[in-house]
Length: 477
Image (cartoon, rainbow, N blue to C red; front, side):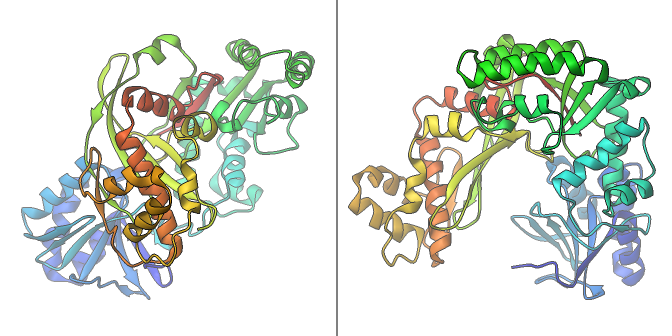
């Protein structure tokens, strides 16, 4: 298993030019990539030349490795096409493409790379800021009424954000002040991080788990709340009344949602969900429950077959959806468990396959458990001395007929949306239990009778348009 110990990377042009100077036969391939991406700095910065202990990293089967930090299929195809004109492809296996020159393109698995020197020669931060630091770094600018210099943000937060985070803050600030609250009006608001328990009492009350039908983020995933200063007293009074009635089951969640919608439209109380912006600009969307939109969402069918490494940590379901004027919308649901080997539970989230951050989690209580009650129990079954997922499925099915059809399903390789790999591999108990959970959920999805309703609910939940969701803004890009 690869670790970050001793690994480092040169980004974009810095890496391409370094490799071209280091090895004469690399000059032509690197020039091909430079020409392809000369006017596309955002895409170009998804390329990272790999080093180990200060020397160029030599992977198995190749001499040099360039990691590709984007899984955009069109981007990957353009890279391979440009290189193939000057450098023959030797072989392609999954996320790895080797060329005869000794170059390897390796599509990163999604884990954040560390020890990166940026295209501009600056060190990109090697640590990941906490969620609260990420959010506070953005809120600082709102409170200041302007985009602060990176150095000042770092000093006030006490964290060394890199240029990538500053790019996100800059684009998010531009979008926020253009689409949500104008820069000249920022002084009329107070801004609070949702995860801060010291925020206004009215914000603690409307996000109290006692009155919400699901986890807070499945009701309203706002990371930042904007409260108009001259409306605070009125808002607190109205929230107090709603909160007390909700605690005593005298008012429904719809009443609270209506209140938030009214104040949102008046720009008195505004919730904003933040995603790190990695593209050239940020997009702002209003997320709200809309009957016409909900009715328009439909599951069309599956798209790409997922090669499911069953001893891995997750599986994807690639689907085609439609909504409103979008007749074909590619979307991806990712299922992955959390917890120890003896207490594993399944979770899921969704996004367009080429989008970086996920739109959001699929509600566990109201969606996943609604369709698949008790499905997590498979990870708690007695598996004896099983050494593989196949062995464990046999043991479980013999003691509980409930799992007989699952065992038969597991014995076949290809299914509607997954092709199973490594079900017979000898692995640890933890990997077996995780594999049982993942494959059992894949089986339940694959064989579910009303798939149109299933994927519609999955999609709406990931988009935070549950029947109980409330209105908010989302900034992403």
